Amino acid sequence: MFRELVASRPEVCTRETRSTQSGFIARTNEPLILIVDDDRELRKFMATILRSEGYRVSRARDGIEALDKAVHLNPSVIVTDLCLPRLDGSSVIRWLKAHPRTQHIPIVAVTGFSENEEANCRAKDACDAFFEKPLPVIAFLDSIKQLTSLAGTNGNGFVRKLSSTADLGCELR
Image 1 (cartoon, rainbow, N blue to C red):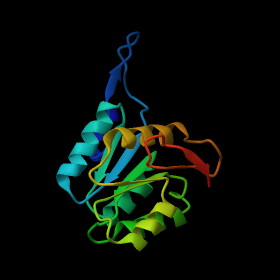
Image 2 (tube, rainbow, N blue to C red):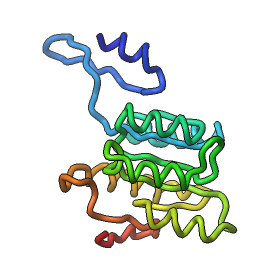
Image 3 (cartoon, rainbow, N blue to C red):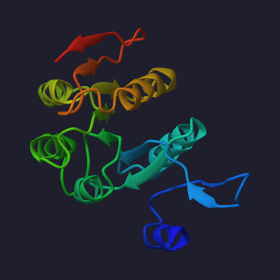
Image 4 (cartoon, rainbow, N blue to C red):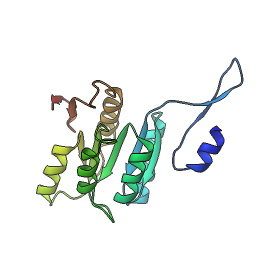
């Protein structure tokens, strides 16, 4: 069944592990991160660094695909660009935070455009972490680690908001 599941949803990367006692092959339970960006190379780069840290990764190219995957896959964290085709990142974030099946999922926004200050401010307020490109890899990985470790801290989702500063200080929502 595991192989059929993977074959039917190849965008969900999983690792097989072999139990030393029974030879049983099982899926590991690492957190699933959904990466949403229209830049193929950046999606690939983020997926590579997240997988190297032990996370499972799914990728989406645009806002519509992101919403579909978020609802069906229930990722631990969503990392999204703000400038996306078909449905912009700010709209994706608003929809995710309003939908009962996704409102608990932490969102990390990434943008390469700092000139749209108003949109960036609205996105910062709605997200759990916010980064400008070029992506500060260590701070980014630290925020993902904190967000995945906080999963389930209360029944309604996350109670903390991460900053993208080097110390990753937290403030109550």
